[in-house]
Image 1 (spheres, each protein chain N blue to C red):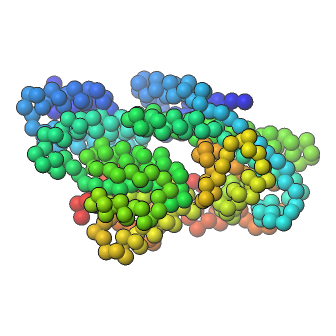
Image 2 (cartoon, chains in turn red, purple):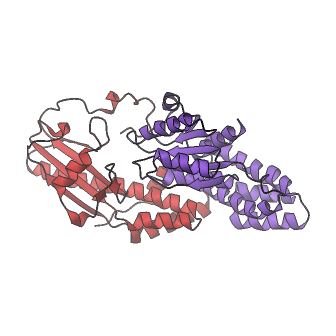
Image 3 (cartoon, rainbow over the protein chains, first blue to last red):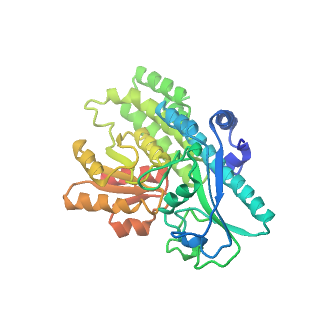
Length: 197
Length: 209
């Protein structure tokens, strides 16, 4: 499966509200073509059963999942190569395109999970990523232990970061009642945060 | 057109080859390197910074301009008698321990290099000890630490403590998505950059202090 990023989506992510000059538009189009050969979308999800060590976010949910998606390492290797070759604008645009693509990859995975849940009678669900408020980054380890899929190609660093970097993971729950708030509003840095979801 | 203006325009518009060509032409016709530096390159990058702040330019264009300035600087540097006149300062830069995100850090490094700083880039997942060790080795003016996550930005405080504890004459500049003024004050860093352009501005201010 592929993840398609449109020119308009990339321009928006880069901050442009109006079309920039033709030289930049050409570069953006070139980068998007380049990305098509570099992004290797893979994803996996798994239903989670009640067990010891269940992350608090999942407690009380009758249906719960862990999932992860990645674009592989080719894209970020090319980003590094472009920086090293003294082409920072290209590198930055490609990296940004990768960020858009991995967000879309996460949405595609989330759609699959929701379809699965819907088929089992659950309409509305929530997903959260480790590092979000209330979900410790260490939860990454737990997620990847559950997924146990070496074919995905994601490894974790000592500080629970995913490699390749253009990867994401999340927990999802359907039904039941949350045991505590996992809202961004509960975070002391809410007002100034640029990462708010 | 006035050659000084030509170089200025080339940097402002991010035309790398044009900037290099015009600088060589200017030097060949006897224009002083310091005039090119101050009236063309620095003046143009100041405007780029302003336009970025006003939302008129975005990162890719700023990077083009920084590259144009850098390419021009390559021709100017040998013209300065001691080599020191062209150097704005020395910065050791890296991503905080535990963090492997480097795009923001790379952008700041490019901006710094474009502005004439000597930059020692330590990469990602850099321990506080490594920052200080390198800064001492290269006689840096500024240590710049980047982090993308609230979990990894905590090690920025360690860098500050280590610098202060050793009584080193170093300024600590921090940056990254979760960093704000309150956090900067909380850990006692000297400044924070809210984006790559602001990071460059702050680095320039820090070396003047």
